[in-house]
Amino acid sequence: MDIQLKRGLLDVCVLAAIKDEDSYGYRIIKDLKPYMELSESTLYTILKRLESARMLTVRTAEHDGRLRKYYRITDRGLRRIEEFREDWKQMMSVYRFITKEERADG
Image 1 (tube, one colour):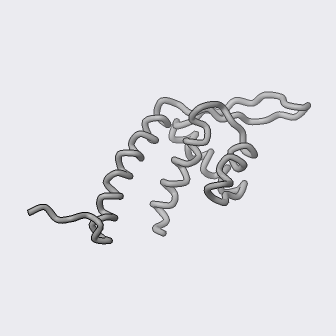
Image 2: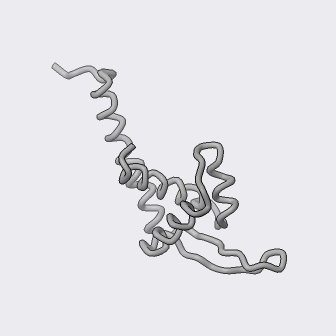
Image 3: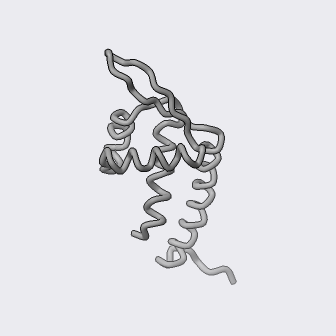
């Protein structure tokens, strides 16, 4: 798979994992596990990239005597998910063309 496409997919998957509620690293990995394998190092690279792009914010809170980072999606992150949905519709159209599932008009 093209590295840029894969990177974009991973970013959107992480955003989707925190879309409905704040989350933390281990939980994000656990939530994504049925769909993909994601290492901690890969996840934290993605989280830093998304934070730099202002698609999520980070807060630190104590949990069981330890500090834990919680991630929250921003409006920019929500817009990225919507952009992905539109892009995916176009990708599926191209896929159908390539695999001849789409009939030509006229």
